[in-house]
Amino acid sequence: MIAENRVIAVEEHFAPESFFEIAHALEVSPDDRAEMDLMRTVEQSEPMRSQLVDLDARIAEMDSVGVDLAVLSLNPPGVQPYQPAAAVALARTFNDSLFEIVHRRPDRFGGLGTVAPQDPDAAAEEVERIMGSLGLNGIMINSHTNGHYLDDPQFAPLLAAAEERSAPLYLHPRVPSVLGPYLEYGMSGAIWGYQAEAGLHAMRLILSGTLDRYPGLTIVLGHLGEGIPFWLKRIDNRHAFAHRVAGAATAMPKLELTPSEYFRRNFVLTTSGIDDTNVLDLGLRAVGDDNVMFAIDAPYENAASATAFLREAPVTDAQRASISHLTAERVFRLD
Image 1: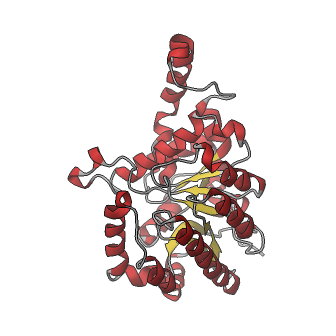
Image 2 (image 1 turned 120 degrees about the vertical axis):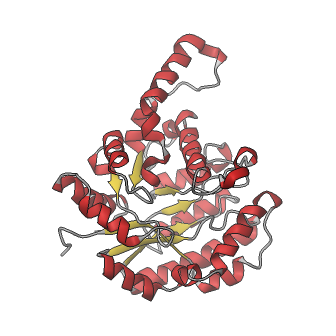
């Protein structure tokens, strides 16, 4: 029986030691080298290394702050910076490890598998395996792959498989594909670049008409929507203006719905890293009470602060239940 006050955290990163041993020996493309140098420094430093690999310690922390279940995902940027053949093999290896963890402790862990979009056909096959024989709960993609976004036609097999298998797609940030203006002042990372990059990716999926072609996709955005809820009214307004006034002079495809209607239909938000009641209220109004989920973003955010925010946020009991577990149970099929 599932407790009424169950708490599920849905953006919780980890990596087995075996993954690091393989991944850190692989070459990355020149465009990804700066990001990977940073991430490898983070992954090799303590206490971060232990926090990423030690799931017994993770369970102890979950117990201490009152988290019942964590939906685990590979530490970003996953396998996307590597050459296609190596990335495909590494994704399968990671997903096998994740299956073993979830199978061993289904009471404490769910899992989002990883895929290598560099090889869209192989990624589609891996989606089938993730949602089929491995029985995991969805997939995570770390924004762009070699500077390309999921609205690109080359990724059609991956999106078709995700829609067909009802695989929620967690669109996680990474360093922007165009780095120039972000390089100074430390702006390329989580302080600004991450949310700008993920928000850009989500907007490309909306404005390209991708969600007309794949209306059944469920896309999960962290950080309470990567800034998009703040802009939704203006996005609708300017989209309508562009078609009404500028017409064929714009590059905007005709869409079946308004941008905000896609946002409400296809997107689910998580609280990861945003312990702010004003932003939470905005997110709830943007997508509805049943489309916001709790996340810590472990081990990069403070678990005690995140769970305190969940307990104390000025929301109704029904909203708190949806945020804490009901929406995650539905989206990731965690019942």
